[in-house]
Image (cartoon, rainbow, N blue to C red; front, top):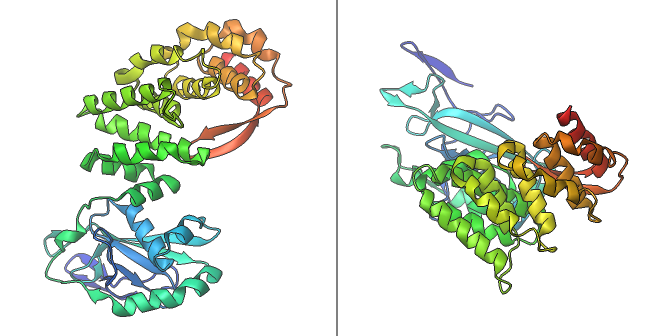
Length: 365
């Protein structure tokens, strides 16, 4: 990497973090969508996207990944990190000078830009490389007189929000919420996805985003909560991920929305909704056990339910709220071999009811 001193500052020419070769200034694709970031390509096959602010790195990752897939969104969402591609980042990049400035300041300007690199594995590149090369040949240089207005904090599309949920970029989603509360609507529509693991991620994201938005506009979140409860009570509507979303919103903003917990209890008589309800309560109890503690008696009865999901989540709730009076009842489940899907931080694993019971007993000790 070429480097030199300017006064006390070190500046360097940008290079590919995968092969070490120098890279060109990012360009705008001829086929770019209104919100797409400038992109580039290294001779080793890695591609990159430029984020001028350094605050939209999740979107930069998506733009680079989709570009590397020759614009094929379906292919991009089917790829897995490490298994199908690697990702690295070059920080403090200045597109005006085409330098990396480790000190973060150059010629009186703050340098916060980043180049987000994606290198697809060889078998994927063999399919997409010709199209990527063709796109780069038609790309146009960016003006260098200063950052283009199009390159600042940008409006986001529904596809970008969906992609951020898929790759579990929660920090980026909450940053977007600071710019536009429309993200509530884009995330709410994802609660109707067929894949329930994806629905859980969407509900998780919605809870985090609502906690950010509620600081300035709690009414917007209250309106959403009422809509979610209505969908659960309206037999003509599909509730899908509504209960999970309610649980995540209360979990992330218990001081503001803990008052909705009694409304959740009113749904416990609906056998169809009961597994979802107990799961939502479990998510709340994990972070705010004080909201659930006074209703511990309800979950003791659920320990004998024929549904493994209800038994497992009920045991987890009783552990989180420290229900010592239920210790003997939970103890009876330690040999229960039935498994349930358990969601944590974007991932889902299978846990036996017995394991959940043992964890609960540990918390009661």
